[in-house]
Every structure is written in C-alpha cells, then in structure tokens.
Picture (spheres, rainbow, N blue to C red):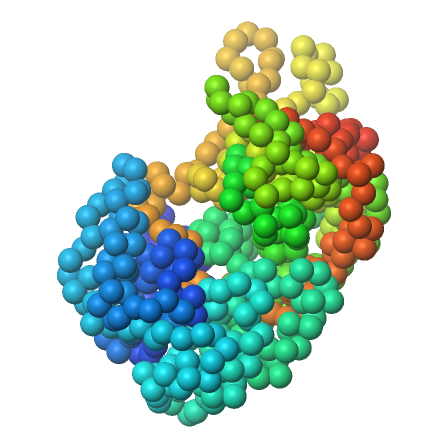
Length: 509
C-alpha cells in the first residue's frame, strides 16, 4: 500500500524511480476450501500473477484443504486447468499460460483432504507446514469461520514464533448484522491477535479504489476542495445487470443491503470521506476510516428505499422478476435494490449528503463514486442564453472500467457566449500497461508482507454494521418495497429520494 503514491508519480515524466517491490517471505499459503469456486476463479489466478511478477519467494508453497478425495497430482491438474481458463478468457488480452511460471508452481502445490472440523485435518496441515510462515485463507462458507479458527488454535497452528508469522484471511460475509459481527470478532479474538486477522474486501484490491487516497492526498488541487464549502453531495453507485441467478438460497436470507452496504459500499464511503492519515501505516489509515463511519448519523425510514426487480426485457430477451426466480419465495420481501441517504456529523462533511445505491438487474454494470461540486454563481452569465451552468462532477470509475472523469463548463465556439459541458477522462487501461488481474493480487501480497492497510479491523467492521443496523431493526415490510423493471434505472422511489432535495441521480445506463 505504501507504494501507491510513488507508483502514480513514477509514471509521469519519470520524475520518480520506484524501487522494485520486495519478494514475499517464504511460507505456506493454506487455502481452506481449496477446491471451491473462489479458489479456482480468483485466488489461484492471483497467485499465478504474483508469480509472473516475480513477487513470490522460492520457499513459497500452496496447500489446498478440502473434503474431496484428491491426490496432489489431481489437484495440480485442476489448478492448471483453472489457470489456462483464466489466461484464455481475457478477450483481447487473452494469452497462453506461461510454462516457466507453471513449472515453478507445480512442485509447490500440495493437497490435504479432510473435514474442516476434524482434528486429523489440522494435524495433516501441521505436518506439511511445520516451522514455516503460514497464511490461512478461509475460502469457505461463513459458518465455518469460527470453527476453523478454533481448530487452528487448538492445534497450535496460529502460535507465532520469533521466526514465523501466522495470519488468517477471512472472506465476507463477516456477520449478518451488528450483533453477529461482534460475536464473530469476539470468537476470532479468543484465538488470534487482531494483527493476525486480515478481513478481506476484494473491492479494496481494485486499483481505482486504492487510487482514491492517491488522488486526494498526493494532488494539491483536490484536497483543498474536498469539503462542505465546495462539495454539494456525493453519489456512490454499485449496479449489476445480473439477477439472483443460482444464488437464491443465499440471497433470500441476505438481500442487497446485507450483501453490499456494510462492507463494499461503506469502504468506498469511508475512503472518500476520511481525513488524511498521519502516514500510510495500516492503523493510521484504518483509524481515519473508522472515525468516518462512527460519525454517520442514525438513519430514519424516509432516507431508505428498498426495491425488488420485476420481470422485464434485457436486450431482446424476457427475464423473470425476482419472485419468479428458481428457489425464491413467490411472496418474498427480500430487497434486490437499496438506496440510502447518509449524513456525516463532522466538521468536513456537515450538511453534505452521501447518497448510495446498489442493486441487481439494473441498466448497466457499474461501480462509481460521483463527487458533485457546488455550482458557480450565475450572475456573470445572466445576459447570456445560458439557463444554468453544467454541473462540475468528478466521477471515480471503479468497474468495469477504471479511471476518473471530470465534467466542467467551456465556451462553445462562436461569436456569442454559449456554454457547454465537456469532459476530461483518465483511463487506467490506456495510461498504465497492466495485465489482467483478479483484484486479489494486491490484497494477498499485502498480507504476505504484513501490510494490513487494505484490510478491515474489528472496529471498522462493526462501525459499518452499526450504520445500517436501524434498517435491519425495522424488518421487512411489504409497504416499503418498491418494484422496478429489469434493465431499468431502479425504482421511482429512489429518484424521489433525491428529488425532494432538488437533486437527481446520474444515469446508470
């Protein structure tokens, strides 16, 4: 994380030459759920990319732990197939698997077959990792987080020595409400020290999310404007075009709010609104993020819109509504969309609303943060045909494209004074020659070198849940559920949420 700003500077006019990143320490990367979809699609390709970059020590090894009855050779065949799929499905960026990297990885892949709650499983893990640095990655269902950490502790596998660290990466969901998040934190901390726990949010591995800090704190012309005197409001959007698909069992008990807001959306909000840390030390950054989340004032029902997608047409294809999806209760009150208005009670942001929205079956796949600056006075242009100036908006694009767009007014060529809105755009793919990634590379590497900046601390997790807990306490209510057609901008009630403040959402599609 400490290299983010240096990297940005080094690309412009060669004004800075960054030292090559150091290799990871030797040790074992132990994946519980090593045969699962997350491991195949994201973790293994991320490790492969780190190997391609020369960032893994020769003493590095992968230990996959799962229930399936596999040999080391069968697992290695599965890993190769996963990596070939990853390198081939990159569209115009498709490449072949690098045989030199695969030859390096091949002997470093081991398999341990066993049940996650069996003592014998952890003894087998101990046998192949004895005396080494270890990272235990919990790529498993949330119900196994506590039991696996308990068993690791009982087996002595998380006991650190002067020459060996032991760290645990915990995937989301981290709890399903504030009470369960506190309970899970308490359980993990009975076995581990806080500095051993790396609560991962893959959104924070995206370059543009990390670049929020670089944009704000390494550029002298942004930070002086980043306050209530100059910013009118902020919009955070995380939109998906897909429906629930085959995840009905999970989604029925979760919904859009639990799935996205306390983690992904709150992290984007915190990085946008946080004060400058005294350094890029992990705790300095996380302290400031937690302060922002603690300063969110309590929600009221009028500031929340819950929606659910109805049948519609995507392209020329008719798609079902959420209640018609396989495995979904035909009378379900689970929201597939949520829009919320947050206020932050501190000196920088008092009076500046933060509007957030996230949902499925929307008009486009898009995650972005839009900073809407206050309008300039119109008096100078009162005798021109201009009714109002184009708004000044800075949009930080996070996915599917990564970059930054600035919108401002400029004079249209001609003899009269006419203003038009223009845009300047910075695109990561055009400016930086980065290869295809999963978004996990930075996070895994940071854990290897002990940099927790991009991982959530216990108080950060709990502050995110605390901000949305009032909505969960109100419960599901059919009267508050707004329906919207698939492939649309979302429910009309979400438009009304901004319209009452004389504002409007940026279009998704």
